Length: 116
Image (cartoon, rainbow, N blue to C red; front, side, top):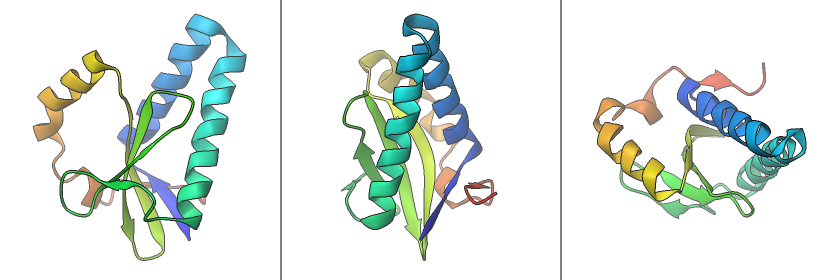
């Protein structure tokens, strides 16, 4: 099994890493990225581990140390990560306000392959 990242999920992750780097330094930023990789590895081994989320086969996996959710679908032997979103109340509200802008996000061909 492998995974792919939607460009917005990649941007989410990059923004989160930059947020922690600016506020607490490289160490915390690297810890976030390491936990992301660990979470992906867990999901690759157990793709059904995340909780069902909203509709169309989406699932949500909560990162352990950081307040971020990985929103994904499983398509054959691939996990498609559509979002790496903050669970902070302000950010969740902002996402709800723009959710209608990406209804097909999880089913598009705009995923960047993690293999290359």
